[in-house]
Image (cartoon, rainbow over all chains, first blue to last red; front, side):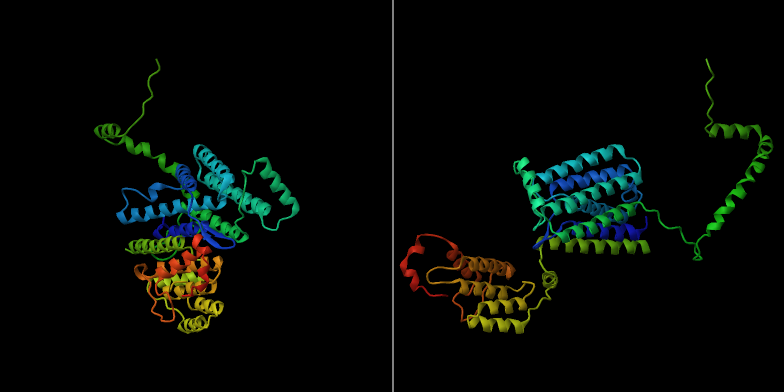
Amino acid sequence: MSPLREALVLPLLFLSVALLGGLRVGADVRLLPPPASALVLAVLTIGALARSRALVLERFLHHTRSPLENVSGAVAIATLLAASAQAFSIVTPDTGLLHVIVSVFFVVQLLTTLAGVRDRMAMLRSITVLLGCAFVLRFVALESLYAPGRSVMKRVMTALLEGVTLGAIEYQPAGAATGYVAFVALAMFVAGLVLLDWPDPEPVRSSGFRLKPEATTELPVATTELPVATTELPVATTELPKATTELIEQSSRVWHPAEPD
Amino acid sequence: MRATWVRLSGLAATLLYASFIAWLYASQPQTVAEVTGGLTATIGAYRIDEQAFADGLSFFQKDQFEEARAAFQRADPAQRDPRTQFYIAYSFYRQGWGRVYHDDVLYRQGLEAVDRAIALAPNQRLVVDDPALGLHTGDELRAELQRGLTRDASDLNPLRVFRRRL
C-alpha cells in the first residue's frame, strides 16, 4: 500500500465518515457521538474485515515496519474504527425499541458474516448490502412513515403499530437532509473499505515508461520452447560426480513414498 | 525519504482534522458563523463588529431591546464575546422585568445568554463597567434572573410593586 493512501487518503476519508455519521440536520443541527452499541458493531466489523482479508492487518501493523509506519497504520485503523461506529450509528434509529431491534439485528448479521464469509469481495458485498438495506429501512421507510405532515393513512398505520406494541415503538424523524448526509457518508465508507486492499498501480520504470500490454502476449511463445530445453537436462546431470549428486540429494527434500505392506 | 515526509504530513493532517471534529462535537455549533467564529477565537483572532455593538448599545440605552439584540447578534454572530453576550442577557432581563410579574420566557433566554457569557469570560469572571447598569457582574445578573424564575411566598408580597428595575 502506498504511504499516501495509508497515511493521508484513508484516515481523512474515514474521519469524514466519522464526522458526517454523527450529523443530524433537523430543526436544529446536532452532532451525536456513537452509542456503545455502535462501538461493539465497529469492533465486529473490523474483525470480519480482517478475517476475510479485506483488511490485511500486517500491512498496517507489523514488526518489520518502522515505528513511524506502525503509528501511521495504527492511526488508519483507529479512524476505520471511528468510521465504522458512525456508519452503523447513522443507519440505526437514535432511541427507543427500534434502536435496540436494529442493533441486535446488526450484531447477529455481523457475527454470521464473521463466521461464514472468507472472501474479500464477498465481505465487501455483504457489508454494502447490509448498510444499504439499513439505509433504505431508516431513511426511506421509517422517515416516510413518521415524517411531519404525513397523510392520514400513514398516521393510521403508525397509530396501529404503536397500539399493537403498547407504545413501545416510537421514532423521531431525523429530517430529509440527514438522509442525504447519510448516503454520502455510507458511500465514502464503502469506498474506504474498497481502498483498504486496492492493488497499487503498476510500478513505473526509472525511464518513466510503463510496460506495454503487448509485451505480455509474447510469454506463451517463450514457454513453448521450455520442453526443448528440459530434454537436454538429464544429459547434463549424468556428467556430475557421484559425491556431488549425493550431496544434492541430502540437501534437497525428496519425498519417497513408503513401501506398501 | 519521500515516504517518511508523506507519513509525517499525513499524521499531522489527521491529528488536525480529528481535533477539529472533536471540537465540533464538543461545541455543537449551529451555524457556519459559529464554526468560523469558534475557530478564530481558538487562535485568539476573533473580533466583534464594533459598529454593530455601538448600535446595539445605543438601542439598549433607549430601552429598544429587540433592536438592541438584533444589533448585538450582528456584532457577535459566533457568540464568542462575553461582553456582548452579557448585554444580550441584560436586554432579556430588562425586557422581561415587570412590577407585578416577570416574563419567564425572556428570563430563561436571559439565563442562557448570561451562562454563555460567564463560560466565555476568562476564569469565568465577567465584570462590565457600565455606569448605566445596576448589575455589573455576570454572577449578579445570573442570580437576579434565577430569582425572577423562582416561585416562593415573596411573590405574594404587595410591596413588590415598589421595587425598581436594575
